[in-house]
Length: 153
Image (cartoon, rainbow, N blue to C red):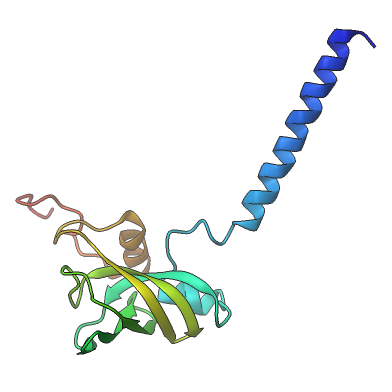
């Protein structure tokens, strides 16, 4: 083999190794790449207890209970509901009926222990993933995602 052929074989085999490594990483992270899971995803995917996930949806009105730094509330996507318990200070923008994403551990299909609660940043913004989940469940309002002062179509 000439020097040029050896170099091409070495470069080619390096690219093959990198491609195989990328496929293995993406396969292993397939379920973790999702920004969050909705309550329906948790039920349908039969997520195991003790699994660390992000859970997102709307805070169900009338379910927020605060006692000192402990809080419990329900997150819904319109089809299923998961009870969330959280110890800490809730974000200032946390309100009933608004979208949140929580990070923590699934206790069972209907209970979740959060260690982080993220609330949307203003009354008009909604992450695309939350909006898509609401559309899928049939709970989409025409004014979601509009800029302030922009009329609903």
